Length: 139
Image 1 (tube, helix red, strand yellow):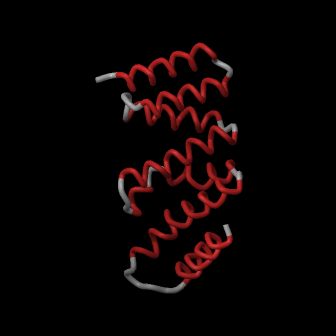
Image 2 (cartoon, rainbow, N blue to C red; image 1 turned 90 degrees about the vertical axis):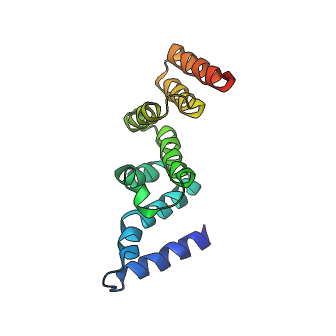
């Protein structure tokens, strides 16, 4: 975590320096720093902070570039943090968004099952796990 915190401190200093016409500064401020801080918070087990940092920017992560897989890793980190933090309403929104975009993703249905477990809905959890299994076995 020490090296990560040093990197964050260097980026915080970077965004304070006046740089006209440099879009990287703005992207770092709006997206890069919150993502970096969230990753460090996740490593510390501070899941509520991860949700506080990533939820407001979840639809802007693409501004920073990266591959689809890298951006999805940020979204998955947010969802996992919401589940671990007990942020049920946030987790519900995130799972719903994921399933609406990719209804054939076993991962999404497994997260639906995890959410149902948190909510104490065994039947919904079992149904979501069944759907995930069907998708894995589908040709």
